[in-house]
Structures are given as C-alpha cells and as structure tokens.
Image (cartoon, rainbow, N blue to C red; front, side, top):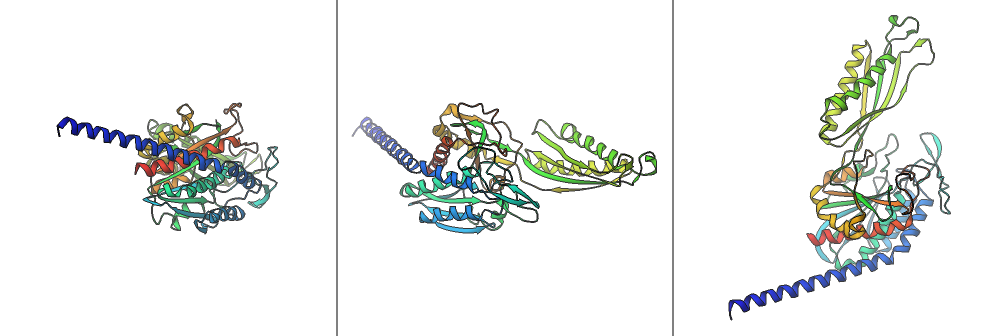
Length: 435
C-alpha cells in the first residue's frame, strides 16, 4: 500500500467522522429544541402562578413546595429546607461527566403591584413592622419558572447528558430579614457545594433589554454592596451660641464631603469605578437647638474586591478623623453585603458562542457595568460562574424608558421566557460537551 493511499484512507475516515459528528450534533440540537417546545406553555403557567402568589425573603414556603413537587414529579432527588426555604435537586445523566450548577432565586419584594394583569399579585405581608404589598417586581418568578422548565427538558434528555446537574432554587436573594441569615451565603454555609461543581450558571430578567436579547460581560459585571451607619456625637447647645457645644451637624456635613474624595482622589479610578452615597441623615428637632448626635446611613459600591476592602478602611479613617478635627466623635459600622459579581473570563469566552447561537449574534449585547448587586456573586467566588441578563421588554417598546426592576410597574413580556429556557439548556449541553 502506497503512502498516498494511506493518506487518502485517513482523510476519508476523518471526513466520515466529521459528517457523523455533525449529524449527531444536529440530531441533539433537534432533541433539545423539541424538549424545550414541550415545556413552552408550562413555563408560562408556572410563572403566572408564582407571580400571583409571591413571598418575601426567607418566607418562600408555598413557592418552595410548588417547586419541590414539580421536581419530585420528574423523579429527581430533592432536598428541601436548605437555608430555610431553599430547594435543591440533582440529576445524573446517563453518561459520565462533571457536575455543574444552575441557580434561580425565588423571593419577591415589599412592593404593591400596579400592573393590570389577570394574575397580578394581591398578596400582602408584614415587613419591618408595616403591612406592605408583595410583588415579584424583580422577575424572580420568571427565574424559577425557567429553571423548572430547564429541569424538565434535561430530564427528558437524560440519555444524552454527559454529567450531573445541581438545580438550586434559592431563597432571600433580596436580603434576609433583620436578625436572620439567608440566601446564597447561607446555602453555601450549609454545604451546598460540598461536592464543588465545575461551573455555575444563572440568569436575571431585565427591562433594560428587549425580548430576544441577552446581555452580559466578561469579568466584573455587578457591583459589591456594603451599607454603613455613622453616628456623629457632639455636645448639645443653643443654636445662638455654637461655641458652647460641639456641632455634630456641621461635622456630619464635613464627613459627607470628605468621603467623596475617596472615590475621586484616593483610589485608582482607571482600575474600576466606585461609589460612596449617603441615603439619609437625621439629627435635631428644633431650629435653635444644636443636637447631641447625628445619624447617617449610606452605601458603598465597587467592582474590585481589593478596592472594596481598601475603600472600607479609608472610609472608617476619614469618618473618624474628620469628626475628631471638628471636636466631635464618630462611630461607624459597616454592614458587609454582597461581593462583586464576576463572570469568569475563561468560562465566559468558552460559552459566548452558545449564547450567540441561542439568541443570534446580533441580539447578544455586551452590557455596561451594573452598580446593582447580586448574591450569585457568592457562588462565583467558589467556582467559575457565568451570569447573564435576559431582556423582557416587548420588542415594540423602548427598553430605555421601560419601568425598571423593583418598580411597581415592572412588566415581563412572556414571549421572552423560551429564550431563557433555550439558553440555559444549551449552556448545559455545550459545557459538558467541551469537557
């Protein structure tokens, strides 16, 4: 046999293998599409039910039951009561492969719905001692319904699945009630990633994109969030004789101005942006009485974990020394919130073609940095994560003017939900195939 004929046979075999692989891939794509179509109507039904009966953070009892019953009906191994009300299920494919995690958050907000829908929320609850309306004003109802649909699709495709899937239905993303723990951080403390997944995926609906669009970026995506409380203590005196006391109001104003130089003059603005904002200042009761004390609260947002730690130290030092210079004393307490949400660059680069294929390349947007925070960030600190946004504003509306997440007018175009199911399902298969 000549060298040429050997080469010819090798090329022929390679061509046959390529054709066979392409045919297999096309067949799997068709199976995924069919499985997704089977749940297309169900995802709408599930979302409407959850929307109509929203529950606040750490109180998602009926939502958790609704999810658990569905997962159990699929024959999955289901664990309930994780981090109070969380639901976790596991699916093992028929083929060997790694473990990956998919996450949806379940809680609603203390917002009274003002959207005219037949399934609008009429629910109410007590929040911080006040009776409030309850609404899925951030779209977590859609997240839950999408992941329920993804679970059903993956169970139907179990014979093609080369790995294991951890379905995470998480409570309290919006923050646990005062005095309680919750959310992603507590789920991890209770051993959610005892067997660490190779990757974790999550999505969030947004009114800032239109139906059919997906948005994300590599690296930092959403800011860290830390709140602070400052008490400035002076010495009360008559307003006409300020020299007889120590004015905490003037000291507080100096603190507010001094802290603004942290972001603008003390940290490297070319590395990442940061924000220090004061949301409230309270002190005094009468025009001619300088009070003993002023209380201020605010928030810190950053996109770099090291910068986050640095700003906290600078804030504390600036507050204390500025007050001291004014003859007052300041006590600051920083409540450490969610870390920076970071999309792992390698994972993001690997999975970008999947999202482009799901939505179409023209519909995949590189988003700006988002100063909102997300506790998906805790998962992404443990293992490579990819978090993306799903547009839900109708195509004939301007997404720039649509009511934002957390608004009582927040509206989800249900035509957007199938893309969420398609994207998540394909992320699973494409990731496992690449491994």
